[in-house]
Length: 367
Image (cartoon, rainbow, N blue to C red):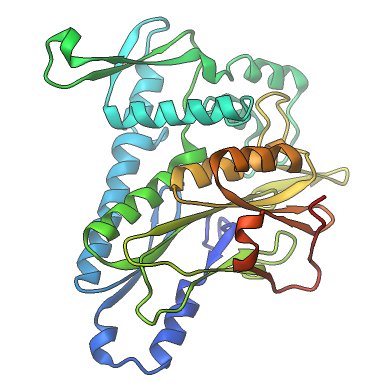
């Protein structure tokens, strides 16, 4: 999900810069140019590329970046000492209720709902398993089976319970939220939805300020509002077997004012190592303890909610094509799945907005 050269590649390349260059070259004068602002910053454990159009574009971008840093450092990061997730992981007592904010409680409830809908494939307690594989940190060894089994014993999203105490029953003006975790060893990691949550926050801020813009937060992208020149937003989907910067196809998303679309991609090429001819990557199956091996090597999800697009892109890799398409349909989301033979499966609702740009890929039969 990282875009710098040290951490190798995001999964979807938002062609904001390319679109912006065409926009500027096409003859808009200095007056319009002053109403756009483009910046890149490191946040959420990845590179954030942000372009805002409209009056107050710079101020809006600065507010967005501040919001993202606050979201990461005060709520979402399991690494950041003092964040709600880190405090919960370190301080909960098994079986006892631990107070959390409504914001965090709602994220946990959302993650549980997606987990239930995907037969537990999205599991926010995957951290013990991710730690022993260490692929995110560059480790290139297969753990011993005993290590995997030990980690799996602490991977269970159903051990987390969110409790809402209504104000009318407690005498408190606002409802309060508590989290109860059944046993020791559970560690919550919202990485599977965190970048999508950031995209949701960006979209809300842009709409409030009546600005349009696009942002790439690692493998999650938001495009919001109508472009000033009336053309579609162009999003390139990375070639999962190409080099960084190569795309296999593009999405052309034309939006009206006040609307947003979210695009998230997950793939087996982001962080991985190869041993004995097999690719071991960072998308781990919480049932088996091993990296996903469903034949799907890249999954792009398009929908109207950032957290959902982020979550479902991971689920689609883990579920495989048939189950993935069922889950996408249930959520009213669209998807583009690429298998190991470079066959591309596209849901009906997005076919007219997607085109292949690389002859190595072809649209597969949907039968």
